[in-house]
Amino acid sequence: MQTNILKIKQAITGGETSLGIEFGSTRIKAVLIDNHHETIASGSYEWENLLEDGIWTYNLVDIITGLQTAYSEMKQEVERNYGITIRKIGSIGFSAMMHGYMAFDSTGELLVPFRTWRNSTTGVAAKELTEQFQFNIPERWSIAHLYQAILNEEKHLPRIDCITTLAGYIHWLLTGNKAIGIGDASGMFPIDESTQDYNESMVKQFDDLIALKGFPWKLKEILPKVYISGEQAGELTEIGAKILDRSRNLQPGIPICPPEGDAGTGMVATNSVRKRTGNVSVGTSVFAMIVLDKELSKVYPEIDLVTTPNGSPVGMVHANNCSSDLNAWLGLFREFSEAMGQKIDTDKLFEVMLNKALEADPDGGGLLSYGYFSGENITGLEKGRPLFVRSPESHFNLANFMRTHLFTAFGALKIGMGILTTEENVAIDRILAHGGLFKTPLVGQKIVAAAMNTPVSVMSTAGEGGPWGMAILASYMINKDQKESLEDFLDKKVFEKVDGQEIYPDQVDVKGFEAFIERYRKGLVIEQAAVDNLVL
Image 1 (spheres, rainbow, N blue to C red):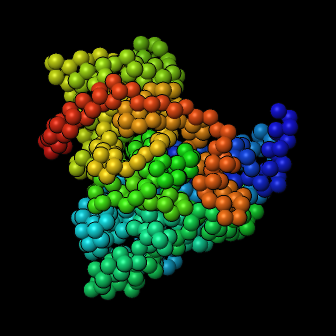
Image 2: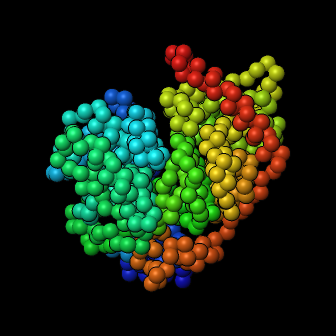
Image 3: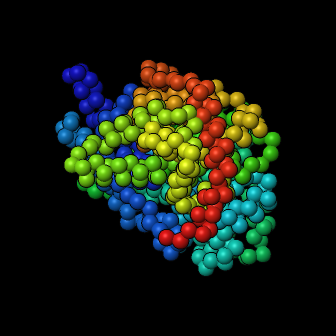
């Protein structure tokens, strides 16, 4: 133990560490790892998106405050545990929620409030661009936001000097370089796998499409430069060091890797960047990403085509809604427990309630739920309306109630994944899952395995999540061997001794999930009626 602490201290003082900071939808987290990729310290900042004038956003003050607070908490943990003040770090990387729209003028002024991935206000633009490019452009993508602003004739457009993502903005703020990792870039605009850059023919199509508008910029001029994992995308400037570390201890000059999206860091954190592997990330939203070994035969509005951090094509199924409604119901059960005079630990509450789902009827007893807090693109609903429905014949008990809410958390995802596996016959060797749901052993894993009808693994590192994955990408930049691929680096240097538990789908659960999904599809008319007619 003493030897281990000594090695960690040497890594910290010698600058042999890597730092990942990720801006998630509800938490900003900083994770510092040593040269063996073990977590040394972490810090976090809780935040929530705001609905302002019909737009989901985060303000710049919270962005900077969260960045500084997460770093400060991590720094203080190092000081408490090891008695060392951090002055240098081997490498740093920033990641964040993908997509959205941040537009700046030449002075660095944000021209309109940050428009996050959660907004579903770009439907017309997304549809027109999909038809124009013959390539699926989801509503979340930055180019859809830009084109919708053009269709709306917004006044800020002539002043645009650059557009970027949240991760790209943080990177630019601290390095002065308008850079973006290829995975995050692939959620802004389509990527050409052969050039590892924005698709030139589509860039030209877009410029031709808006030529008559007479803007003083071309698309490529306002997009950030694309970088591949392993490349250096800048270094921490003096101003950047002062912004990041309010105590002014951190020295500038630290190499910074390309900023990435949370999808890419999730792939790294689960070692699923090789072709024919995939991962499922569970949180406020849920997405599955499968690294493709062949092109899809046609365009599907349910499938995003993005990339890994090293540029391999990925089929991504993204559902806007996952755990929010489940969490709300568990909050209600917590209130009941406290009203009865029983205080209950959060982890214990989730463990008990989720495990009840294992006692349920395979199909959830005929119950039906839609946990739609917001609109859901995959099922074609523009607005959300959380809904729980049962018939007089339904088998209504706690176990079925919990299984139904777990099933519905993956309902839209199941529909999207069916396109890849059934219509396109995409081969999947393994699925790795991560997210808070999997802190309770077995339950979430069994449900996902049933939904995917594929073996699902959860690694012991799954709880580390995206910030740890970002720190790994930062470490890869400075610690890789010459010509060592990201896949090999992860296999040999990060995950070689990491334990994982794999669960194969139980065919009874698979059939039960299929029965639920049939009910779920038919019941969408009820959900649409609730959206259209229920006024609260």
